[in-house]
Length: 135
Image (cartoon, rainbow, N blue to C red):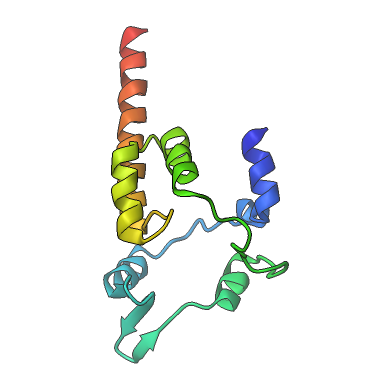
């Protein structure tokens, strides 16, 4: 239930109903090669192109409703951030402090978050593999 409650609360439930069975792998490859993560745009022969929120709504049939994300009143102290990083992300406090210092606040940049995710995924897959071997 924890998963479905979060999906419903996020408003992303319509994504579960999207069904794209036919993918053009050539097109996906072409777009991924032209993606510029620094600017969030695609560099095509016709010029620079970006994807808007309206594009996402049209493609995924998701309504654009509600308030935009607002972080006012939700900031936390460095210590609280370290606690959350350790508890929820399995990210050591010493590394967390270094990332907070680099980000100038209780924030984790996307590149570091990606590394944390990959490390946790590797640990989970290894644990699953070891569990299967024991059986």
